[in-house]
Each structure stands twice: as C-alpha cells, then as structure tokens.
Image 1 (cartoon, rainbow, N blue to C red):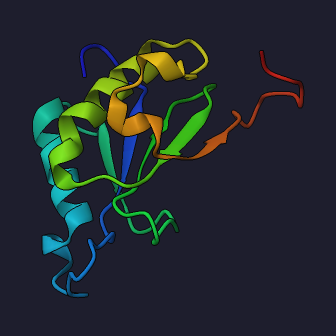
Image 2: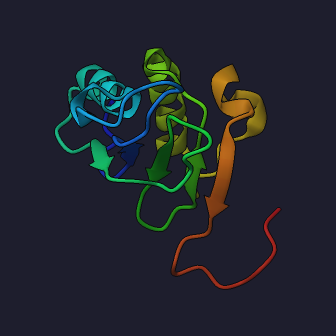
Image 3: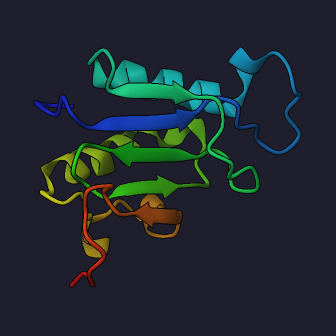
Length: 128
C-alpha cells in the first residue's frame, strides 16, 4: 500500500470456507487470503494475521485499523478478493477518519460490512 505505514489489514487466518477441513490451518481460505494480500502489498507488517475475528458465519473476514481512525470489519471474502480488499484499504488509509464512503467502496465491500468501531479516543458524539 503506497505510503500507508500506519494502516493495518487484519486477516482471520483461521477462517474456513464451507467444507474445508479443520487442519492444516495453513491451507484454510483465511490463510490463503492473508498470503495473497501480503504478496500484493509488499509492505512488511501491513497485513496482520489474527487467530479469529469471531465472524465464523461469514468467512473470510478482514479488518482495517489505524490509530485515531474508525476500525472496520468485513466478511464474506474468497482468497481471490485480495485486489478489492487492497483497493478498499487504500481508500481507508486516505480517509482522515477511516470512514470509507459507500459509493467509493469496491463492490465486494459494499455488502460485507460486519462492524464499524469508533476510535478509542473519540468522545461519544453523533457522526455525520
């Protein structure tokens, strides 16, 4: 991701596609998605593997996080979705507050929102 060192793409590497075996974990859909994203970014640390994002009914699950920004969690991705996820992560990185306008999101991310979590330092106030 060009010049986006504080943005992290979190990828649940334990996510399994329907019918996938429990082991080996390295062959699960989530692990394959993580590998595809890491290969595309070329930035060490930009893609962070996580054990579980607790969205097991909507695999594969990813999140976008950065200091002072809203955190997003999205589900329903195949490993082949890596380019769309990376495009959305770049939009997230460019947004000062992390809020990605719905109209600008790649199609795969318009339906997949699981949660949007406010920054920890943000006072409880309505958003526009």
